[in-house]
Length: 301
Image 1 (tube, rainbow, N blue to C red):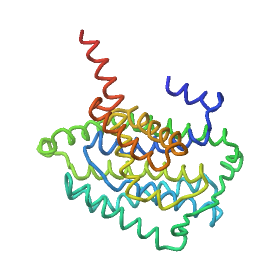
Image 2 (spheres, rainbow, N blue to C red):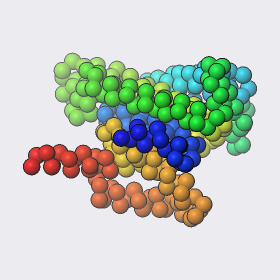
Image 3 (cartoon, rainbow, N blue to C red):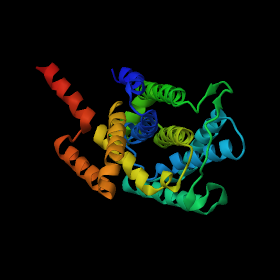
């Protein structure tokens, strides 16, 4: 049902660029949910991987003349490599210490992006052309670009579903529920968590690379700590540990930001915060989580 709505939305007048932006953040939220919802690792620095990939892709396409598909691939792999380096340090800690290490590393990456010349500093990286996919499909056409983004989103979503339902995904759930027991069963817990972290950062990098191609720019807001907070909000609002939850959360937050920005100005953050507080109180499992729990109660009757 959701896929059908996404397929017809731009054809019935919904602004394609808004939809593409929301889908990019939905990919980002799904990546974060793989780490938090299914592995139990809370990262406060995930924006660093989305933003660094955005800069890499933007610079390679605009300044180095790479094709969009190669730029997307390079940004995604770059975020995965960065995730491996950060993960090797952060994965040695647990709980709030893990979160603080990821935040510290993300702040380092933020200041690097602020200082190095190719990012454009506070002005950001502007004027990134969309080009042609494989030299054939003109991505300057919003509808062509939209269906490419939608196809990538569906591919990522199905890949995450497959990962979670695989034997590896079952081990991740065991680690989330009871890490000492997983260790006692002989699993190399750190190796499993590191792989989950790298997978999550790689997918987050894909979201950032795609967002740069869609919007044509990358800015410091893409690597700022506040974006790491937003993805936590999206995941919890939609429903942590569910497949559709992060997607619903991303569309809700991006939709509110776009709808309210011209109407209430800076008060948009206050309204989103109040919405989040209300949902946490009324829907503790998130929007999708509560719907799934309600369905289970009905079946039990």
